[in-house]
Length: 400
Image 1 (cartoon, rainbow, N blue to C red):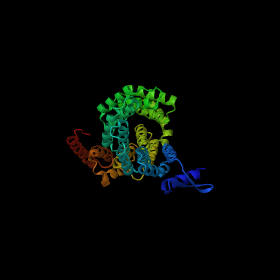
Image 2 (image 1 turned 90 degrees about the vertical axis):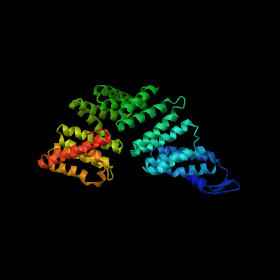
Image 3 (image 1 turned 60 degrees about the vertical axis):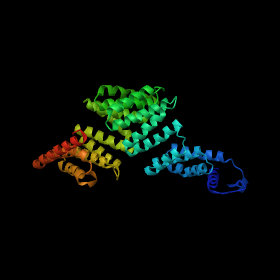
Image 4 (image 1 turned 30 degrees about the vertical axis):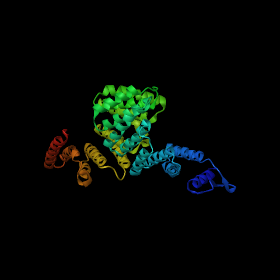
């Protein structure tokens, strides 16, 4: 039956018609029939949506040309919009970002500009795309536009809460904590759903993270404990693991090594199920914790896992972060020459030379490491660290 359905779809999309009748292949052979095209296209649409929900992006992408073709031939803007949207979502899932952006922008050609909810959704998709690619400036631009339309939609509290939360997270990424706190408070005040809800837990989690970032560790801990409770009751495993990791970092900042280790260890078994960039970052953070506390074997083991996750084509900033962490961990373990090799990677890679804002810290940690091998060279590097720190201060207003 499934094979018959797929053949019907193929012929529906690509076969011609004779006197208004469509020729469809069935188990009995060819016969002339008059299928309800709108009913068939709805089946295609639901199948594409299901594939996308199941993260079967290639399968979903195989059906979207049918939707787009039907929408264009029948001037059906709703089906055409679905075709563009599902194409964009599937391509984003496949990490084909430029193609995903192309389809997301096509959505604007079929949406009524006075339809606020539709415009909010269209801008949100672009904002999410740029967020995934790490272009936070553009992400904020499009999410702010999405917000301006969401504010025009009555009874739109849930969408508004998500919009506020996402903007809070992005501003925090850029260390703009004033705006991040402002949007997080708006998210809390706008949310009107149940307590045991993933969105509510996510908003509380963001509150804790912001408080931790500005140094209010005891207050942050209260929020993370609430998140853990809600996540456990609701079965939200991702947020539960987040809360374990976040409580680990808070206890580490409070100097409670025993509790920090306890929560880090609770989070480790779940990291393999998390997105690559999150897993990579957490391995480095936990590795640093063990290194500082003289468990160098565990630290280097986690560093090795971070290297596996980083892959063959990491971003320049990720390379800087990784090799700096590796150098510091090896330095603490007393492996000074190996640490030197790690620091050298940063300076020898031409793609990293543009990251002069990272120079002060890089030169400084390299100088501290070199002190064990060549003190004269160490002082030269320390002077370079001061020089680049002063240049950074002049250009950005902030010195390392």
